[in-house]
Image 1 (tube, rainbow, N blue to C red):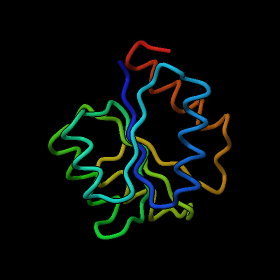
Image 2: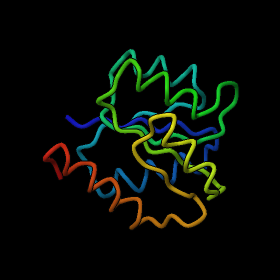
Image 3: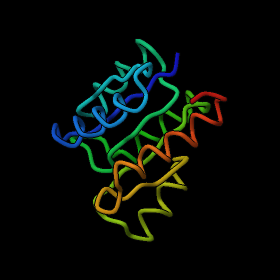
Length: 126
């Protein structure tokens, strides 16, 4: 069973991501978190295969949370999401061990689906 965790403080964007993924991947188990603390609790309950994480979260930054998660669960694939497609954010995402970087402003539903399909193919799933 493929598990995805969406860590995003915007309810509307979190719902859009979840609805998009659920429509295309109905067997995917999708959980949600509003901030880093809630995310860590969700990960303890059931470690996800994929995390879609906002770079800016209440409390701890998405980048620091990415590093903490990857240190403990290196096999989890993490996609950093941001409204700001800046080179320094891309570099920081890589430095903090994120697997992918996605700009919210230029991401389309099909682009998100394609990215998730490529990640699923790494797990030999679709």
